[in-house]
View 1 (cartoon, rainbow, N blue to C red):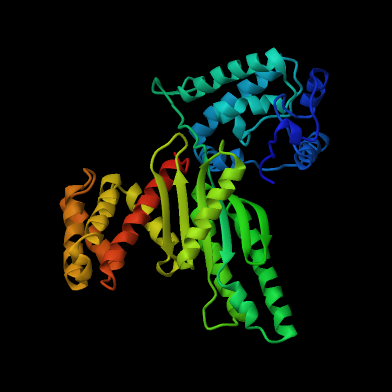
View 2: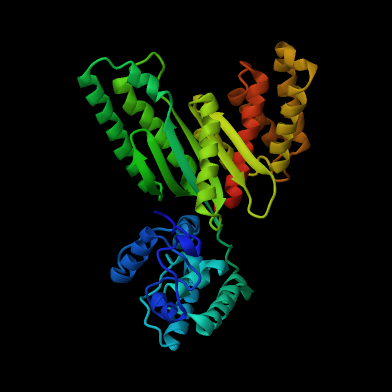
Length: 421
């Protein structure tokens, strides 16, 4: 489980009196929390066995930032000093705490500092004061007051509060099962599904994720944003290669994957619902990857589905590389989407031969109109020629335009919330 089940008081395992609050706090159960039986067991196990770990969604959101700290010696030094100051502060409050390191994600998010203190038994006024004091240390860290370079403050980036919730399901598995005629084949098919489930667990783990459920062709997991595409691509590839050994219909084995990019403060029930919707969106066409993303606090919702036939993972990763190299900006990506919408609603839609000639010209025009200052005219020309040659092969030009627009927008959105420095 990646997150406690927060219930109403009536559904909770117990109701807390004022006398109980202090004792429960020592076990890491917050003053305002109402937990079910499973969550109480989880919390008490952490108290009884401190070495046990249950990675939280906060940990997953923090993972790319922690990787950045570990790779950047200057940032690592600054963050380590901040963490040491927190440790010293707690010691001065006569709190016995285990050594704190850079894996303590909650200390880098202002809204999670209180959780950190609750789990260490602080209650009431003492917790409020500690939260305010540590928040000031965190602000000092982000303002660059811990270290300077040539007299200038070194301001660390702020970690992203977003993570990815992934759900995957094999396509037309019922059809495969109905075509199996013999008991031995059923057994072999089940063993193959079990093999995939084991491989899926390994894939999620290697992508720094946590598997919530893996059974047969079903996968549910939460993963750092910067690893979610890699996880999806490897799951799809593994499913196809594993299931080919026991194919029982003319249709090649395929899997549909939905990913919800969510803020770590979103209720888990809603997160799971968003991921399920993304998975169902992918299943409309099957063999597809769908991504749902809506920023906390409002803004446009991104809900995009791309077929695995065009290898969306490799495509989005390539577009992310182009983005980092300053070949395009959001203006170009959203301009492509507007271009698609214009032609999709026009009379040209019934004249594909005209669109085959017109759309590449429009893409070139837009590329130069939105050219970044970092690239020369020649560099822009060579890049756009490469893009058109690879992604607009004139099989269905209008839909190809739609695909590259959506993949570019995904690249933009994922890069924005991935937490990279």
